Every structure is written in structure tokens, then in C-alpha cells.
Amino acid sequence: MKNLPSFLKRYFWDVDFEQIDVKKQSKDIIGRILEYGDEQATRWMKKKFATQEIVDVLSRYRFVSPKSANYWALVFNLPREQILCLQKHYMATQRKHWPY
Image (tube, rainbow, N blue to C red; front, side, top):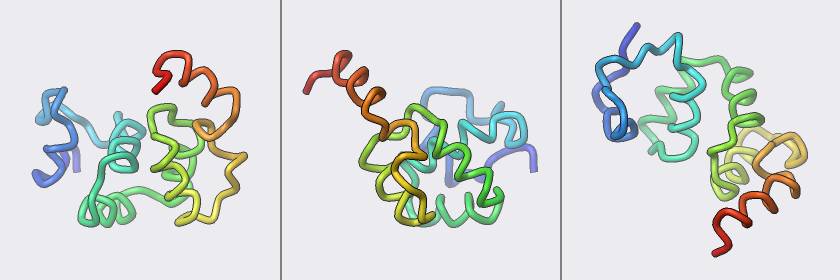
């Protein structure tokens, strides 16, 4: 499958949905679903991608919010220390840019 299923289109409002390549852009796809996905999207993600690939994105992807990261850490039984966006230095940097 080169293209995404149509029900995922709402998560990619800022790009040309038809041009998204699942293999080449898997990290971005997983990151968007981790942050914005509903039950149908997360079910698709878990079928399409290996658990380790999802965990790798969760651990390194900087655009997952702390709220979403906490949730997924519980789902995948990951220690908070393993997730980049939950690290103190990262959260402090994030607050400098958006102090609210």
C-alpha cells in the first residue's frame, strides 16, 4: 500500500494527501496518529506498523505532546525516561517557545 486509507485524510490537512507514501513517510504518519488519531486510526496504525517502529517514533518524535506521550507510554508500557518529549530539558525548551 503506497497511499493511506481515505479515513486518515483529516490528519494530514497541511500536505497533499494523495502524495503521501506510507513507506517513505512512516515516521510522520505514526507521529500524526499518535498525536491526533482516533480509535480507527490507531487500530490501522497498529496493524500496518510493527510495535517496535511505533515505539521508536514515540521515543524520538518531537512533536508528540506530553499529554499524548504519557498516554502512549502507558499503552506500550514504556518508562517516561525513554520518551524524548517527556525529558525535562526538552520540556524546558518547549516552555521557552510557548510559556502558557
